[in-house]
Image (cartoon, rainbow, N blue to C red; front, side):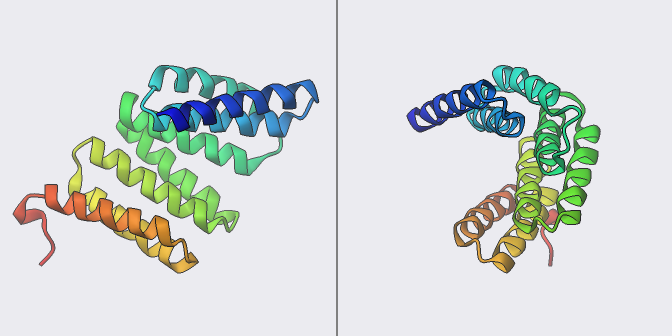
Length: 168
């Protein structure tokens, strides 16, 4: 918790500096870091406030990579708090956007976060499948720590699955 608080403080300070220097891209990146920090800390209200700020700042700017990160955060919000079917569509669109940019790591992160969202909704078989997929993608790019995390979460999803949902 202390590390998250410290990271949010640094992100806010970085955003303030970027805005003072009229660096729109860096200010938007810092706003997205703040969104992710609050969301990861399960502080959904401030995260939603910051996502609105990030969305406004990115509007009209030519940064498709940052737009895709914003879209992944929106997918998480919709999937968890508002409209799960819209969240699913946004996760798929975000995956496609990162694939079109050849951003393999971000594709894998998107698959992983989609799986986390499915776990929260109790959709364990689908979550298991997505965690396994994320692990394979992380493995392909050599992201060892992320492979371990995806494998651990896949095992956790498998433990929660009913016996008839298990693959033979």
